[in-house]
Length: 350
Ligand code: CP3
Image (tube, rainbow, N blue to C red; front, side, top):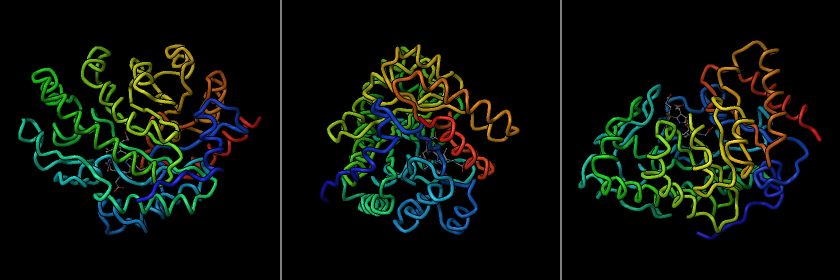
């Protein structure tokens, strides 16, 4: 597979410029989970097709990724896939259960389980390369954001066997057998880095590392057990020269550590204001965030006030990409999402 550069216009788009800390015509805006069940056109296309299957079909991936761009006029597309797609691609037996999330057939809790996890090679995911190339061609000046799950969040699904509130098996392994934990995370970092690289080499304009569940860790544990592995995944794509966004939920205490892992943009969830995030990170990184996804259900006046505040707070950062603090909730009214995009563009126009 040959390496493709992102289109020049996408590399000079508001999203990429903001991520590099350059001036922008308006604050760029996109939403985590902008593709998905909130859109009737998504539900129609997904009818009768399993999530993992949908993620491996370039026709569906292309259509679903483009849907929110057409409908909402967002400043970026996020590649339609899932953090567990590369794990399935290296042969781990798992499924994505509707309303639940990823479920792993055999939880990984011992050395034999860890040693079965092999590296991802581009030949495992030719469809991902194809989907990204098709999308980059269709999107033109609109940047495509590729992504992967970070080692800790992937490890949590593998060790727990599915979604978890307390992450008790994960933390027990981490503290009980640090060598095995580091071996597991090193393998996941290579998979994650390779998955990012496939998307970057096929022309994605930015890459986001999702460490969704890292907020359950103390700073000390993040440093001791996690940071180096996320850093390894991010380092795998450093030479591509596209901005790398590093996001987690409830990671207010970890923002600087996540930036120092090698990110170009630090994602902020809604529990910490952008003003506080800016102070905590010392203005070292552009920020992405951070509207509470539940506010999309609030009366327009309340929502509008909050959107304006976030845009205003973002002006003080070295760069600001407007987003939610986490993903669009399935019952969200898509028209409200479109209105928020219009409002962000209007109030931030320079
Ligand atoms: O629009 C986008 O943001 C792109 C698509 C995307 C999906 N998953 C599609 C998806 C992205 C970026 C992800 C990443 C992902 N997957 C994360 C990190 C982001 C986050 O939300 O913190 C995590 C933790 C997962 C694991 C996962 N996959 C969960 C928790 C779920 C939800 C389960 C459910 O049904 O509520 C999934 C399934 C999933 N991934 C769906 C979508 C659109 C829903 C499945 C469906 O529509 O049938």
